Amino acid sequence: MKFSSKSEKKIQNQFLKKGYYVFNIKNKSNLNIIKNRVIKLSKAWLKKKSIKVKNISLFLDNLHNYINPRDLNEFRMHIYNEINNSKDFQKLYYTLGKDYIDILCGNELVMQRRCNLSIQLPKDDSSLLPLHADVWVGDSEYEIVFWLPLVNVYKTKAMYILSPEDNFKYSKKFSKFKSTEQIFKKIKNKLKWIKVDFGQGLLFTQNLMHGNVVNKENSTRISFNCRFKSAFSLYRDKELGSFFTPITIKPTTIIGMDYEFPDA
Ligand SMILES: [Fe+2]
Image 1 (cartoon, rainbow, N blue to C red):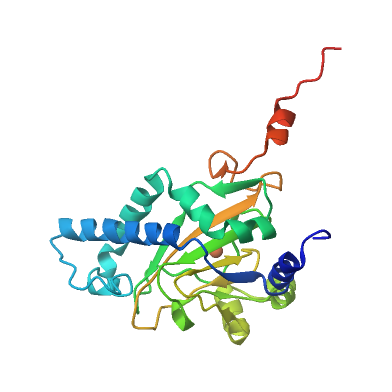
Image 2 (cartoon, rainbow, N blue to C red; image 1 turned 45 degrees about the vertical axis):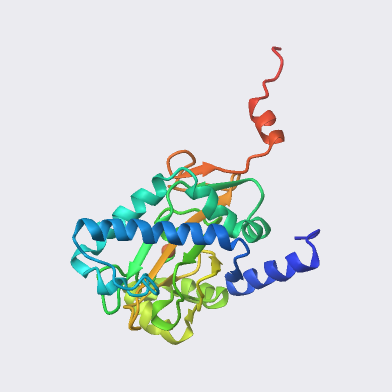
């Protein structure tokens, strides 16, 4: 950070202080390509089930009018597979957060091969992510998550995160709790619910405790999330090749990796 510009430092300091950063996406055309692709795939899936879409405006917010919780996972997996199989998706996704990911994480990056898709229908408790930190279950502590909502998220429609300060405090008391549910109850009023509008992106460190609850708002939440890390930072269970793919490796690194010392 020593030689970061003033504007970069502002972003970096805020990320260090809060553990997350919300930004306005500049590349609106790529954002709309992704959103429209999701809508098109959704409509095609619904058509196969003979379900007609009546009103295309606010279609994603109203997904619960078309999909019942029983079919939600099949629907979600269909969109997840189709969109991740499209050749340009990863690049489109990266371009939306590139400026900030580079400032916060690095310029020789690896990216999760397949972006996760998460959908929370109102009042549905079947796809919850209770309090957790991904680093507890095999993710590298050097990862940043780029979280992209396709609808406005707020209150219980949003995700929550614990501040770095409280995360440190409660991590130290971890053994005193019997379950993460117990921790959740204890820290409930300390959690920050991150409001993110469609057109914005959220970057956060998954080292901090985070999660979601039942969506008590009256519209659906649909969001992508994808992990990035510096290529040469520590890997845990999620490995380069199987989980991560290099996206911005520079020529000097390629030359370095190929170098062989002369025979002695
Ligand atoms: Fe997570």
